[in-house]
Length: 407
Picture (spheres, rainbow, N blue to C red):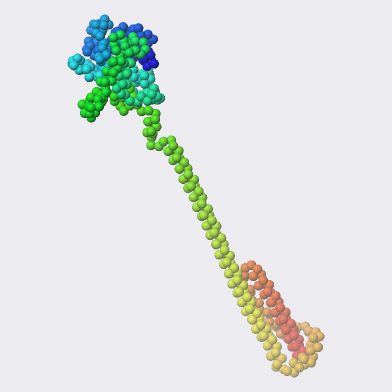
C-alpha cells in the first residue's frame, strides 16, 4: 500500500525545489516505465555516494557522462552502498574526499523524509515546513510516534522502490539485494550494548542524533509525535470537568449567600416588629397611668368641693339661727304658728328681703375620655342638689323672717 501511494505521489516532489527546478525526464504517476535508470533525474539519486560529485555538477552536460555510465550499468549498486538520495546534498558538497567520509549528511536526505511524511502524516503534509501533522493521522492510529533504526531503514528502502521500475514490494531489483541493504542500515543505526550512550552523545554520534532529526522533520517535534491521548493528558489549567465543578460550586455558594441574606432580612424585620409592639405597649401603659392619675385628682377635687359646700351650708345654717336667737319670742311664735307658716302666702317683695347666697361651683378639671364625662355629670348632679337645698332653706328663712316682721 505504501509503495503504490508513494509511487504515484513522488513525481510531484522528486526534486529538492519542485517549485523552481524542472525535471529533465518527465514522469508519469500511473506508470513506472520511465523510473529508475530510465530517468536522468532518478539515476543521479540512486547512484552510490562515491559518484556524488560527478552526478551533481552544476551543468547537466557535465553530469551527463556519469549518468550515461550508470545507465550502461558500468556502475553497479551493491547492498552495502549508501546511495545519493540518503544524504543531505548541501552537506555533501562540503566534503573534500567522498571516498573517505561516508557519514557527513547520512540519512538526512530530503526524499526519504518526504516518503515518510506521505506514509505517516498524509500526502498534503509532504511539502509543509516546519512539519505540522494533521490530527488522527496514520502515525497516531498505528502508534508510530518515534523514529528508530528499523523505521529509518524501512523508509530508505521504500524510497528506492518508489522511484525504481520495481512494481510493488520486492526483495531484489536485479542484482541488488534490498533486504540485505535494509539490515545493513539497521546495523549502522543500532547502538551496541557494550557502548556507553553518554560518550556517544558527547561525540555527536550519528546513532544519538539521527532519531531526533527525523522526529523533528517528520512530526515537528524532536521528542516525537504528540498523540491525541497525550494532548488530553496535558490539558490547559482547567479541564472541562474542572470548570463544570467550579461552576457548580459557585452556584451553590451563591444560593447559600442568598438564603443567608433572606434569613438575616427576616430576622431584622421581626426585630423591627417586636420593637414597634413594645413601643405601642409602653405608650398604652403611659396613657393608663395618666388616666388613673387624672381620676385620682378628679376625686380629690370632688372631695374638696364637697367639703367646701358643706362648710358653706354650715355657715348659711348658722346665720338664721343667730338672727332667731336675738329674739326668742319670735322663735316660740314661729313654732306655735308652724301650720300657718306652711300655708302662708308669701308677700311680694319690697326690696328688703334677704339675699340668698348663690351656690359656688368650682370648675372641674378637664380630663380625657369617659372619666371627664362621668366627673362632669356627677358634679352637675351634686351642684343641682345643693342649689335645691339652699333654695328650700332660703324660703324657710324668708318665711320665718316674714312671720317675725308680722309678729
